[in-house]
Image (cartoon, rainbow, N blue to C red):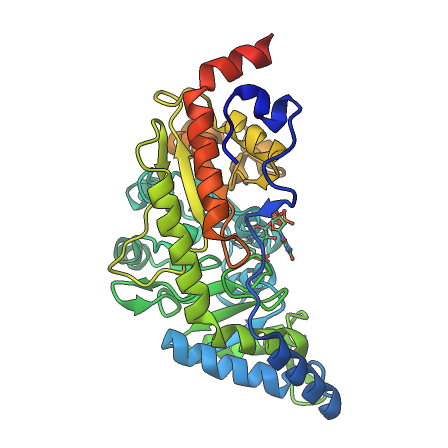
Length: 399
Ligand code: T4K
């Protein structure tokens, strides 16, 4: 259905374009029948958690996929980041981008480590390594890079800075499952990399995450911390938490692993459909993936340029929401604008100009296995319609 006039917009009372809401984070689900069989096996075994056979199998398969010595699955990525920070003895201050999900900052603060926000590169959306050194103080103990949208950080330059200043280097790889950097799977870079397997992620275990590392001593420490600090049945050697993954989650992970190629091919098809549909719309730029790398294409991200577009990002989001297209503004307004960081560093925005601009421009559009190419075609036509009729829509809203 093509909208012919602005009266046909749901924002102005017309029926929405879609009867059911289209989401950004609709879970990718693999072979259901196989999953049910796994769950029956699990019930037969009566082994539901605590390093069960599914957890062990998943860890082994993930380590193979990422080409790392250790993969330790955790109940979610936020706890995985907390455990990583603690196991690496991060203290004082850690430098990270503000343009990330709030969990990256909270995980540090939760461990009593102060997050110090660094600006991002407007082209890559990742931490701008050229701005890191001036943030380093005697209290700095680490750098946390985030591979935003699964596109790798400038790992080599981050590594050089970390080595020069004797800092730990970790990566929040929540978005980067199955993605490569210069042909090498993300997972093996820095001291450790942390993945999220949340329901909305490319690869999901309902809730879940993992820490990947090639450091034997670190892996052993993390395994202990994941299980209250236990070594053996009665011996607790250090402070720990409960970061364990259940067998149900691990079973979901195992079936998701079998469908990776299918998920990628659907996501890529969607990405190409968006690329075609959003071509030549003034003020709208689709964030591209490097086709020389492996990508999971999980995020369809557009940037709305206020100078050349007829409407701003927020109005586009409002119009899309009314049409049952639940586009999201990740990572608006930036961690530095959220509590407690907003109160701790009220002037942080002055030092984060690119982050501030970016948080006003980005919008994520629905994709994944639940969104077909026909839907994408309609979404793109709607966005084009909004841009063409921007001034008229603005005038109608003002009146
Ligand atoms: N680091 C980074 C860079 C991250 O992006 C994240 C998480 C983390 C660390 C922490 O990872 P975890 O500790 O979660 O493992 C969502 C996710 O909850 C969050 O995991 C994710 N990033 C973030 C980017 O997005 P919300 O608050 O936006 O979620 P919510 O409930 O609004 O859901 C998003 C959309 O997905 C909605 O339109 C509904 C839809 N949805 C959601 C779920 C859970 C479904 O259709 N089905 C579902 O089962 O944070």
